[in-house]
Length: 387
Ligand code: NAD
Ligand code: MG
Image (cartoon, rainbow, N blue to C red; front, side):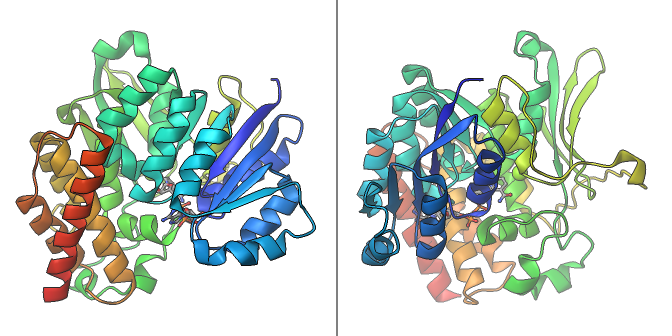
């Protein structure tokens, strides 16, 4: 494998740090060009000193001077700040691999700018795919960029999906851990705190996706993500709770074969898989010890306690506007829950109410998407104020 240049958007987050771990393990294979973060100056500066990118961007302009001070001994590293600088970074700095690991719709504009360059786009940032999947996929088709999934379920499917046998795919089966509230009663879930929600049994992740895992909204988003990534109708996408998180997802073919990918609950496996693709290179992450396994179980989703899954199927039926509304309202609701403004199940009510009111079907341009996303957020905020 020749040396590949890498841009990491969201370098200080959970996925960003795991990506840099893979780069650290293979100094002969990867070279970092660009690192970005929103506000964690200390971590971004330490990463810049270690990986020597040509350019770093901090999203929140208030942190520009602190970052400049922290990197004063490295005058060759170009530093910029602000939302526009993230997009400019994506436009100006070409890379063989772009890791899209910003959280939320904030990642959409840098993602689209990176896609325009082509190359390999490793996409962890699922929210833009949920809200603007059609535009993301078509932009990649136009620029020739190769869009490959980091999300463990979609990466598993990618590894066992046979494009030439697409017509014989009967079902994509997304596995779900069930999150920290899998065996909690509905009453107990209603009074769950943010601290309990972010305490995931199998995975260490950022706060937003941890809350989404607790409500199973993460799986709801992943149903829509799978629909766009693999061009599969909702009727061919199923969810199965698999508490041990050993099988990361499956594809069932018409001949009765079910192909799956297994691995430790460690995002460095899907990240290494994509960064080395189409070769297979060594992961610095954990390994699965099959001889130590005691059981592997599967159970259906309990829709009464986890209503998000059915919301995703409804949203897909309604169209892109509904998917966008669901994602936007959920982002706002998760943030309100994390700051103790609303209760756990209020997140579902607020998202559902936003979805019912905002179902614009046709969203053609990126500007229309951004405007509609803002409208949905404002509506969700208004529901939160009345809670
Ligand atoms: P995180 O919160 O740990 O990190 C988010 C990163 O994005 C940070 O570097 C942060 O500085 C940056 N960021 C936050 N807000 C920003 C903004 N407004 N503008 C620009 N940058 C901003 O999140 P994470 O867990 O690493 O998740 C990142 C994405 O990957 C999410 O979309 C998530 O759904 C997806 N994902 C994560 C995991 C996981 O295991 N963590 C697994 C699958 C998919
Ligand atoms: Mg996932």
